[in-house]
Image (cartoon, rainbow, N blue to C red; front, side):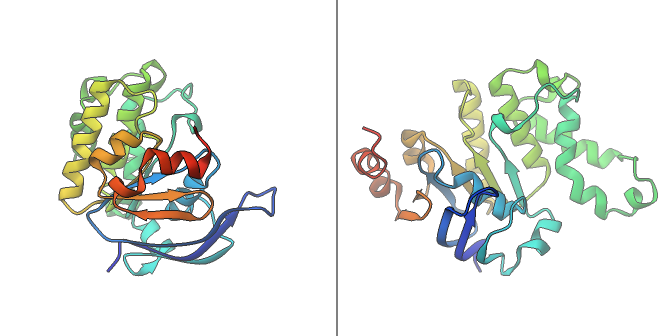
Length: 246
């Protein structure tokens, strides 16, 4: 059974009839780390939003572990760490509360939370502490999110995704604005998750890193241009010719 299976997925921006995704077909098994590569405007973030349920496709079929997406989305099977640009960093919220939002589906399904909607029990905080510890941010738990550096913010949103305990992890440009130490920490966490069967899709412009760590690479420019091993697909000359980057 595939973690994600897409058939002829097409999508457009709300104010346009031009397709940003055109007949996307995907079969992604569990336990694979996939590099999603393409220029700005290629549809990478749109595809992520469709998978996580933030946007509807115009047409096509998407299944997660063989079931309709809305079923798995309710269960919190898919976790999404978006680009920094989509976050209001000035919102007055502490680091641990950001990570807590990743526990929403677990809180909603528990008996205690139904009886006491604002009660967060000890077991939930333990999961949050563990997620922050994994990314080296436990000591920052009570700091406001606005006080963190770019790399620290990336770590916090990775912790949020980890706290969700999802089987599918979507990362949109996880290495942008991240220092080398944070980057190495993120990579080691992702490789460990993959070994435990997590399916990871990373949208990234860092071709060198993707060649090093990805099992598979997909080149997207509104449609799938190439799909295969990173060594073959992420050839710099081919990428430059496809997207006129040279």
